[in-house]
Image (cartoon, rainbow, N blue to C red; front, side):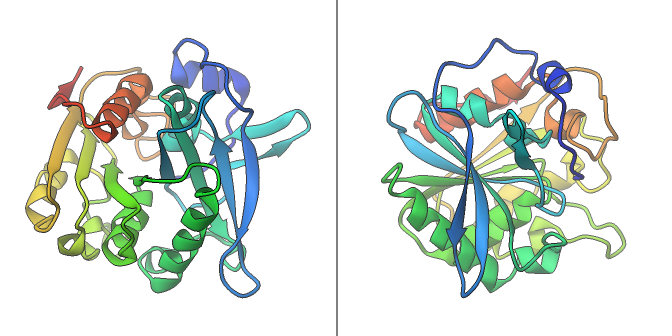
Length: 272
């Protein structure tokens, strides 16, 4: 749920995977959204023309999950951001949204659930169409699931053909954070994939509280629930990304499941 920029050594440990296929170098663009407001977007493109765009909503406050250093773009350790190159390997344009310029302290839960977030997301999708025309899948992790669910319910855009919720916020913290159950889940009309780690020990994201999600998605034409087990020992707090909460050691398998689901291929109920 919290944010750090990860060192190259730590990122290598987190991914524990073969180097990614050659593609375009990561870049950061700024998209004008509302009057005087811009949103930074991280782009990681595949080597060939993308088959679809995955619009990624990281967790925490949504801020500073990626940035510029002297030698180029640096990816933070959020599950979706550090896995952006793995999406590109699957032929998908990975686009991660940063906090908008008028929210310098980051996005509160109320802001994630509000109308301006929907406006910003629509403008980002419009801008990305020049690079990858066609379908878009919204993917959120941790607090980013508030964004993905709320935006998907309200956007009413035929280009959005799927929603993926990973490590969903499902348990209240005595009023300290919101859950996806407070979003209009019943209005989502796109297919939904839910991915959750069995050993996620974060107090906001226990798998037991996530099992009810499919029942709330009454208008989604298809809902798949994939459980994940195992991985590497945590090297962060249980609510931070380098733990089961962020699928540490299972990144490649989870991204494969998501890519297969987007492509219409069958997905397993359990990833070991």
